[in-house]
Length: 315
Image 1 (cartoon, rainbow, N blue to C red):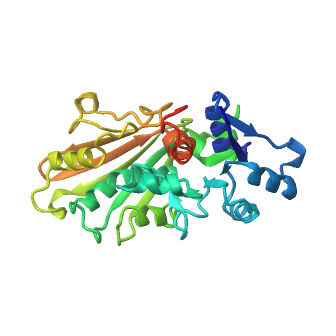
Image 2 (spheres, rainbow, N blue to C red; image 1 turned 180 degrees about the vertical axis):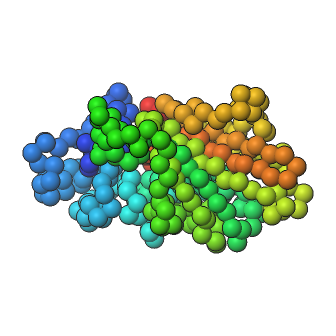
């Protein structure tokens, strides 16, 4: 059996390391590795990028753009985990469950933009409702995301795991308060929303796990919409999807203890979708592992699709 060759540019970062963990166990993958002393050697990086069937870019935005410019092999598929190309022309967005036709586009694509962790959850909630006409495109939406500190990368992980960590790190920390979070453009582009959502992420004192919540006034939605209609819209949109689980309306497993487990999807490649509603209001919550379906797992899922493998192989 011919192996697929894969190179991870930026293999020392959180996302790159996790991709390596997924792929190192697979007999169908040959991981191309760069010597530690050549990680910034442009010629060696270019050689490996062009030798790969699939090249993952786990780099800052500017470095990701530079890496793409090094790829001259038309057969190399680039999967970029940075923000650099998520709304760029010619790039396919890496959520296979987004809409009909998205899988076919990913199979054919040579340029795939891996989605952000917050935006993956937000889009999973809003795209089905916009497509169904339940949420108007011009509706003013707000969203809050609470996430583990691993999403902040190596520096933040070191801060939180330090023996004498700063006392303020023991409490949740809202950020993105300049109202210009880098995930917002893709949150709009792939939900179809025309009004910029008010989005506030919060980092918590736990390693991983993420939950995006969106509150809704039912009177602002399509007439006749109630909690059950929201659940049905999710079920229709995600029918047959193995990595998206629609939970029961006002799930008793959550409402009876009255606490939501942000880490309940950890160590999976799954998004769990919840609707909590009364006769006037609803709270939508999407939960995922920010390092799984929110980053590395999503990238590997897209790679599997592109290579013609089983979509869940290794996940």
